[in-house]
Picture 1 (spheres, rainbow, N blue to C red):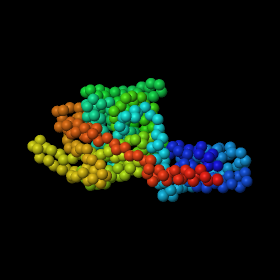
Picture 2 (tube, helix red, strand yellow; picture 1 turned 30 degrees about the vertical axis):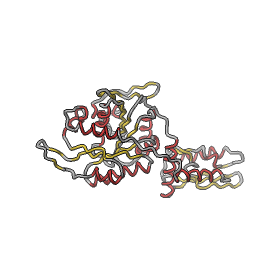
Picture 3 (cartoon, one colour; picture 1 turned 135 degrees about the horizontal axis):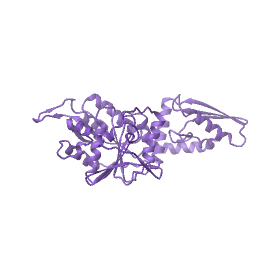
Picture 4 (cartoon, rainbow, N blue to C red; picture 1 turned 45 degrees about the vertical axis):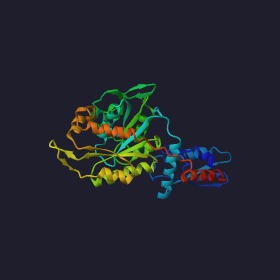
Length: 376
């Protein structure tokens, strides 16, 4: 029975329901089979599909005359275990993409909106490209896309061999390759997507794109810890997370949730950037308009380096409105800071940790052995 049920996959979690531990009971009564499946949420939109697949695969077994499928909901502890198992499976068997293995994939994330995450993403991408690197920029903020305007780029996305081709912009000796919903939709029209549709959009941006040879892929994430963040952990498990915060304690605490989400998704947090730090007036006096120390505190709490502090300066907004990021121009006061952050990112590669001997992986082998020996 369990062997047949391994053909039933949870499309959202990307693994079969036996491996995920969602099959809670199997009962037989002559030719009749009753299967109980626990889902992650009560209103799971995939419930009907999973029920049909269970009936199909169990019903095809010799001697089975009828199948009854009962669905329930995982309790919080069981749900955490299922999600952990799904993330480990995703890490072992990631989705195929055209993103080269040598490219570093960095998700620029924040716990809340309004901290300047997209401005940081764009200027960091420019600073990396000025080092002669080829940098992909994926605008994963599907609802609130702003990367095209910040970079002053527009145009239609073309297809080659049934895959999208990013728009390119030369920056010094380097190249930016940019993909955004802003190239596919009107800037003033609301995009009202959620859940599976959002994840599918990001999945297409990762899998169905000719990214070509890249040194870095920067992903401008939507704020928070929702569907896209969880989907990215499953689809691109080698992603590093770069957390953007502002100086206030409140912003730091919210940003800490982003780091917590990353680690629960088995993603590495590679560093912190404090944006909107002290404002320095033309006379050289520094004003901590939003407080101070948020970046240092967050980096210390998470145990990662503070890669840089970007002062509050009107040139960032002006450059974004004009489509000319401040990192492009050495005459701009913040160009040097973004160059330093780019250097810090390049010089802080992710730490590779072997999972072969960890207790979690050993537990997975034990569970697999127990399931293989289950007579049901």
